[in-house]
Length: 245
Length: 82
Image (cartoon, rainbow over all chains, first blue to last red; front, side, top):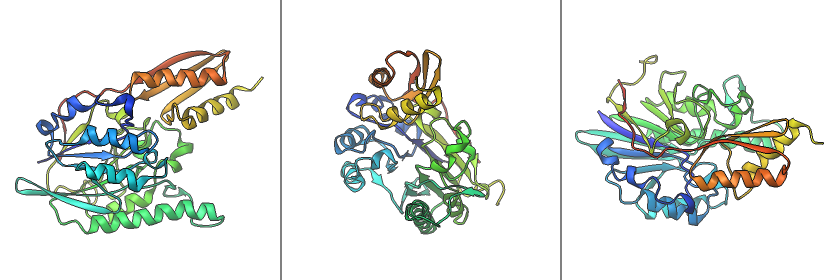
């Protein structure tokens, strides 16, 4: 069993400094790795990034993060990622990391993801420049996620995103805003690459459990959903999907 | 007088876009003289910020604040995926 702790949408700033730290310092008792599913800050400022870095630094397990839309708001995603990386976090955007846990290896590929909607109810790469930019952004990110997942050689393979790959975990959100909460292109990349588990955040009013069309389990770990410092999934290696087999 | 759907939309945008709040995960429901806020925020200070922003835009509305501060407790157990 590989134990995966995960949380998203912690939205830290100076006013919330240190709140999570007591539970985080015990994460090693619960898990082998901690995944952060984006929206780590409120406005994406470097000051907030430093609060995040302090909160998640020097933990007993590796910490792997993707950024979310809030972390882009101040237009400094590269700088925010560097602050986190300098504190020992692994910040992914189209790349992957592999860790050894006992005799097993867990690989995590991460991207922020983006919107666009879900199969049959989605935007197209057509028309105005703004629309093509919107959908094209998702297409590009899904392609990098697919390549990063494909590159992983491990016993357990996890996709980490901020936006959702499936509509299942958005139930509770208004259906009209689903196209701003995720894209089926992320799920298509997950299903094409033998992935075991998909972790995302972003949907504060959604639900925790879902599944891709290919049978990969999806978990929405937005903190308002899991109502804890983090939640933990114990994953048996080589158990992939209920549907795809 | 601004109709409820427009006022609701203005309040929701303000809560999302005002640097004092920037909360996209808070619901705003206007009913008559009341505005209901619901959702989760990261700490107690942010609840106060929400009410301040709403009051500036709609000073005559009475705020009903159902916003909760999210728990940061250790998890109880784990989910096994087999």
